[in-house]
Length: 330
Image (cartoon, rainbow, N blue to C red; front, side):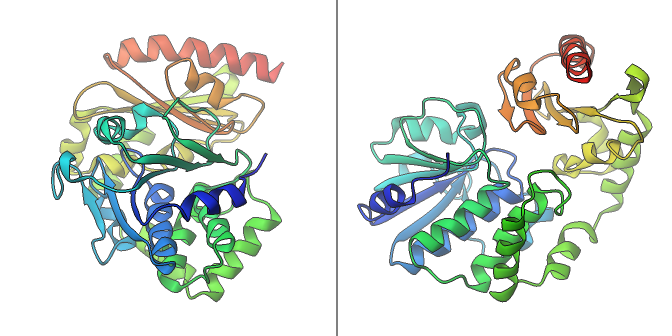
């Protein structure tokens, strides 16, 4: 079932001030959705702030040239987060909100969620979700339509990046003809796809390149090549001169191996533990696998986080993936 846009618009009209929030380790869909929605709300006269628990990755700073995104504990403190409504975009999970989760729990503001992920926690918010949508950025375009707000280039660039990256530049099965119609509208509004692609993928640092080489060198295949997995330790970032967000999309490189049906990457975190990313190009449901470890996402792509050493985490995760993949492959 899609979003009830009439209810969404009715709720928006009740408030004058908004704080927009998304998940930790923000990606293009998180940032693009926030920036696009902020412009949509400003277009109808609302007061808007974007406040995240984590800083915008340097590689994605081009999405926010005006520096509109604030960071909790950096440019703003918890007691300063005040609004009529807090809108959470691109996540429905407490664990994904980081320190902003505590702020949201303590706030008396009304809450609403705009998201395309399957799983959800009880956030005390009105949920506006479409599990079939390929990106939250696409939902923001639909929100603009529901609010009768014309698309502008300021909206279009971050929203294009959101949709393009969450579809693997239109390679994933989530892409539909409506995806391309929406992209065409964003191009008509002024976005230049070649510029966005260049900002994202043609300004790699040497550290990012070295880190990806290290990740690929650790790739292991099992189950006659159907399963592939790799890892990166937190020490590897300093070793390569890379940043944590330099692992973005690295898992998709492993899917280029012929015969691969599922992939997992284990990414060591600075504060300890490992971020898990799952990908599937078969019947294996990544969301169901991730949920067993407190995470979630989509059928073809999902994530989670586990404490422990690499050996410990792999020892817990890989047997589950092997069993799920074997069942999916029959």
